[in-house]
Length: 298
Image 1 (cartoon, rainbow, N blue to C red):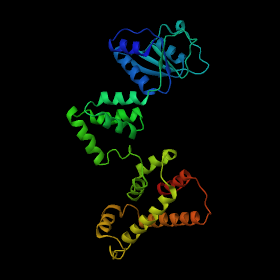
Image 2 (cartoon, rainbow, N blue to C red):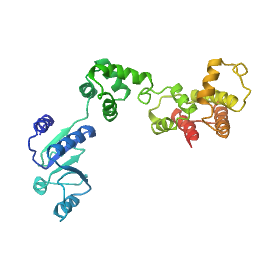
Image 3 (cartoon, helix red, strand yellow):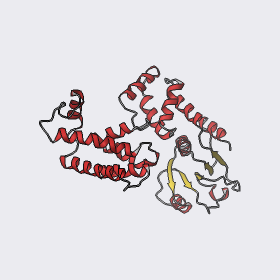
Image 4 (tube, one colour):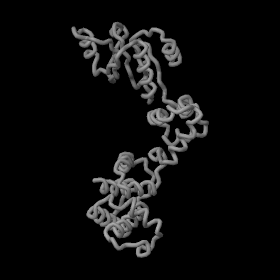
């Protein structure tokens, strides 16, 4: 069965013949969306199973109270036929096209970027093409994240969606979607935003921040905080900074870390800086970033 035919049947709420075989080419999102709609149309409860035997046991049990739509992810050696499964409402999911199977199959190809943009445009009709493209690119075309972001915006009237998008971005509401810069990361560290730092550590291979530059900036920033936080007589003039910068650090970044934490981190960074400059420490950029960030959040 072609995907378009399945879609039309679902929209028309036509009866579907089971079993069905969904071939998944990196398109979990669309498959789950279709499964959810099929279950709704047929008043079924979705039930993921680890084996066919589990389904048989449930169906033959005395105390079965609900009708299930069974979901089973095929193993490499599974060889199931239509005859074996004809009495069950079940959808099989495989990651290779099993053309030798006699079960009606539907292929879910990986979504192209233009298809994802079209989907977001349908969810958010108040955004123009440029705004949709911006949102998709900054979310790296991750449809799960885009669906989540769209759910925040589509509660607003169509004519207000563009304005709300801009307002959220101006308030750094999309800071986790925007391309990370060394200044974003250093600010997160100085503000002790552990959640943001942990996200960076988890996605370290995709972070484009120059490690030695990060060490240099953090050394300067932590020294400033130490001088202000540990010395009640410190002034903007004594630290050779503007009054505005002094007040910002004093009211926004001081007392995030204890004095002990500040000195430990600063000594750690000083040691790293010395070893880097003297050639005693050799690391790739990602290794250096991971090493520094892991020490800060431990």
